[in-house]
Image (tube, rainbow, N blue to C red):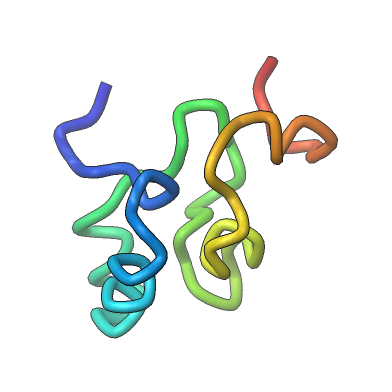
Length: 70
């Protein structure tokens, strides 16, 4: 378990504000979901666009993804 807040658990306003810290800030301040093993999923354009875009709030939304742990 991580001590960083999970990005997907932030409110939409918090997610929007968090994006302003840049890629390094996102990777440093926030954690990607435990079920996600996409390498550096919070790494902006190189990361998971659904997660960064605020479309992911739960594991159920990732079930079809090849990077989702069962």
